[in-house]
Length: 150
Image 1 (cartoon, rainbow, N blue to C red):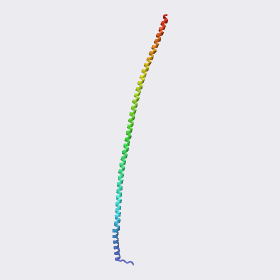
Image 2: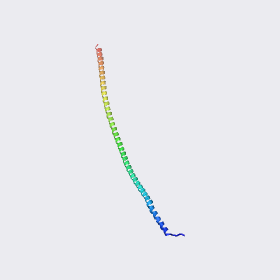
Image 3: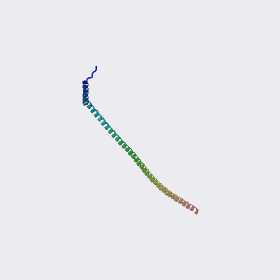
Image 4: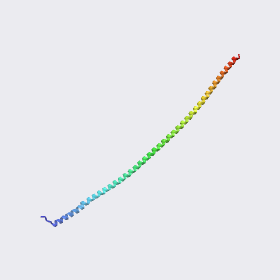
Protein backbone atom coordinates (compact mmCIF):
# COMPACT_ATOMS: atom_id res chain seq x y z
CA UNK A 1 0.00 0.00 0.00
CA UNK A 2 0.84 3.47 -0.38
CA UNK A 3 2.08 5.26 2.60
CA UNK A 4 2.51 8.89 3.10
CA UNK A 5 5.71 9.72 4.84
CA UNK A 6 5.85 13.31 6.16
CA UNK A 7 9.67 13.37 6.00
CA UNK A 8 9.59 12.34 2.39
CA UNK A 9 7.11 15.13 1.60
CA UNK A 10 9.21 17.62 3.53
CA UNK A 11 12.43 16.64 1.72
CA UNK A 12 10.61 16.76 -1.62
CA UNK A 13 9.34 20.27 -0.85
CA UNK A 14 12.85 21.31 0.30
CA UNK A 15 14.36 19.79 -2.87
CA UNK A 16 11.81 21.66 -4.97
CA UNK A 17 12.52 24.93 -3.18
CA UNK A 18 16.30 24.46 -3.56
CA UNK A 19 15.86 23.57 -7.26
CA UNK A 20 13.60 26.62 -7.67
CA UNK A 21 16.20 28.88 -6.01
CA UNK A 22 19.03 27.39 -8.12
CA UNK A 23 17.01 27.70 -11.33
CA UNK A 24 16.00 31.22 -10.43
CA UNK A 25 19.58 32.24 -9.69
CA UNK A 26 21.37 30.44 -12.53
CA UNK A 27 18.73 29.90 -15.20
CA UNK A 28 15.76 32.24 -14.86
CA UNK A 29 17.75 35.45 -14.21
CA UNK A 30 20.23 35.02 -17.15
CA UNK A 31 17.42 34.01 -19.49
CA UNK A 32 15.40 37.05 -18.44
CA UNK A 33 18.48 39.25 -18.91
CA UNK A 34 18.89 37.88 -22.46
CA UNK A 35 15.18 38.34 -23.16
CA UNK A 36 15.27 41.92 -21.80
CA UNK A 37 18.42 42.68 -23.83
CA UNK A 38 16.75 41.35 -26.96
CA UNK A 39 13.62 43.31 -26.16
CA UNK A 40 15.68 46.50 -25.82
CA UNK A 41 17.55 45.67 -29.03
CA UNK A 42 14.25 45.15 -30.91
CA UNK A 43 12.83 48.39 -29.49
CA UNK A 44 16.02 50.19 -30.49
CA UNK A 45 15.84 48.74 -33.99
CA UNK A 46 12.19 49.76 -34.29
CA UNK A 47 13.07 53.29 -33.12
CA UNK A 48 15.96 53.44 -35.60
CA UNK A 49 13.72 52.12 -38.35
CA UNK A 50 11.05 54.70 -37.51
CA UNK A 51 13.67 57.45 -37.50
CA UNK A 52 15.04 56.23 -40.85
CA UNK A 53 11.51 56.13 -42.25
CA UNK A 54 10.87 59.71 -41.08
CA UNK A 55 14.21 60.79 -42.58
CA UNK A 56 13.29 59.05 -45.81
CA UNK A 57 9.92 60.82 -45.85
CA UNK A 58 11.64 64.15 -45.23
CA UNK A 59 14.13 63.45 -48.02
CA UNK A 60 11.29 62.43 -50.32
CA UNK A 61 9.40 65.63 -49.54
CA UNK A 62 12.58 67.66 -50.13
CA UNK A 63 13.18 65.81 -53.39
CA UNK A 64 9.61 66.46 -54.52
CA UNK A 65 9.96 70.15 -53.64
CA UNK A 66 13.20 70.36 -55.60
CA UNK A 67 11.62 68.49 -58.51
CA UNK A 68 8.65 70.85 -58.51
CA UNK A 69 11.00 73.82 -58.30
CA UNK A 70 13.03 72.44 -61.21
CA UNK A 71 9.86 71.95 -63.25
CA UNK A 72 8.76 75.51 -62.51
CA UNK A 73 12.20 76.83 -63.39
CA UNK A 74 12.24 74.81 -66.62
CA UNK A 75 8.81 76.18 -67.54
CA UNK A 76 10.04 79.70 -66.79
CA UNK A 77 13.14 79.17 -68.94
CA UNK A 78 10.99 77.85 -71.79
CA UNK A 79 8.66 80.87 -71.55
CA UNK A 80 11.61 83.26 -71.51
CA UNK A 81 13.14 81.51 -74.50
CA UNK A 82 9.85 81.74 -76.37
CA UNK A 83 9.59 85.44 -75.53
CA UNK A 84 13.16 86.05 -76.68
CA UNK A 85 12.53 84.09 -79.87
CA UNK A 86 9.31 86.03 -80.51
CA UNK A 87 11.07 89.35 -79.91
CA UNK A 88 13.98 88.31 -82.13
CA UNK A 89 11.51 87.24 -84.80
CA UNK A 90 9.70 90.58 -84.59
CA UNK A 91 12.99 92.47 -84.63
CA UNK A 92 14.16 90.53 -87.69
CA UNK A 93 10.81 91.01 -89.37
CA UNK A 94 10.91 94.77 -88.70
CA UNK A 95 14.51 94.97 -89.92
CA UNK A 96 13.53 93.09 -93.09
CA UNK A 97 10.51 95.37 -93.52
CA UNK A 98 12.72 98.47 -93.18
CA UNK A 99 15.25 97.05 -95.62
CA UNK A 100 12.46 96.18 -98.07
CA UNK A 101 11.00 99.69 -97.75
CA UNK A 102 14.46 101.19 -98.32
CA UNK A 103 15.00 98.96 -101.35
CA UNK A 104 11.54 99.91 -102.66
CA UNK A 105 12.27 103.63 -102.20
CA UNK A 106 15.65 103.20 -103.89
CA UNK A 107 13.99 101.31 -106.74
CA UNK A 108 11.35 104.04 -107.09
CA UNK A 109 14.09 106.65 -107.05
CA UNK A 110 16.09 104.71 -109.64
CA UNK A 111 12.96 104.32 -111.79
CA UNK A 112 12.22 108.06 -111.52
CA UNK A 113 15.83 108.85 -112.44
CA UNK A 114 15.69 106.45 -115.36
CA UNK A 115 12.37 107.94 -116.48
CA UNK A 116 13.89 111.40 -116.19
CA UNK A 117 16.91 110.30 -118.22
CA UNK A 118 14.67 108.57 -120.76
CA UNK A 119 12.47 111.67 -121.01
CA UNK A 120 15.51 113.93 -121.48
CA UNK A 121 16.95 111.50 -124.03
CA UNK A 122 13.60 111.37 -125.83
CA UNK A 123 13.36 115.18 -125.74
CA UNK A 124 16.89 115.42 -127.09
CA UNK A 125 16.04 112.91 -129.81
CA UNK A 126 12.82 114.78 -130.60
CA UNK A 127 14.73 118.05 -130.69
CA UNK A 128 17.30 116.48 -133.05
CA UNK A 129 14.54 115.07 -135.22
CA UNK A 130 12.73 118.42 -135.19
CA UNK A 131 15.95 120.17 -136.13
CA UNK A 132 16.60 117.66 -138.91
CA UNK A 133 13.03 118.00 -140.09
CA UNK A 134 13.29 121.78 -139.97
CA UNK A 135 16.50 121.68 -141.99
CA UNK A 136 14.88 119.46 -144.55
CA UNK A 137 11.87 121.72 -144.68
CA UNK A 138 14.13 124.71 -145.02
CA UNK A 139 16.12 122.97 -147.76
CA UNK A 140 12.96 121.87 -149.50
CA UNK A 141 11.54 125.35 -149.10
CA UNK A 142 14.74 126.90 -150.45
CA UNK A 143 14.74 124.46 -153.32
CA UNK A 144 11.15 125.15 -153.99
CA UNK A 145 11.72 128.90 -153.79
CA UNK A 146 14.62 128.60 -156.11
CA UNK A 147 12.60 126.59 -158.55
CA UNK A 148 9.70 129.02 -158.59
CA UNK A 149 11.87 132.11 -159.03
CA UNK A 150 13.36 130.86 -162.24
